[in-house]
Length: 186
Image (cartoon, rainbow, N blue to C red; front, top):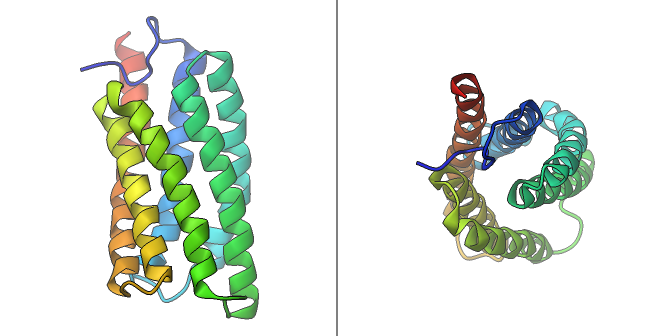
């Protein structure tokens, strides 16, 4: 199995960026997916409160991953930072009023644009390790299911997207944990 860190020698900075980046993605994804999966009626203010700090953290580890010349991780983390920042704005405005401003189909466009973005990153990840590839596949399918739901294809898709998001978050936690394990064995 190829290395989760994708460097010849596991540097402490590479381990930290991988660990913190994927853990941040996992926490944010889990918090947002709980309501989509139907475990809670609405997205909790606690979930919204973590989105901005986690997006900032993802941007920082994205810079560090780029410096380490781990381009795929840098793209994943920068994309995640932008996604979480915009999710905070989107869900914050919905939460404040309790109503979606404008047509729901517009939010479908928002989700499909992110789905296409992460679809392309998933295609780029087909030659790296399995867990990163599964993480990106899960993220892409989650966003696709949410987009189709907002376009009115079927309400059940938001729940499917929620469970896909929970599974994707677990995969992010695994990538994070494996980076720590590999650094200890190196």
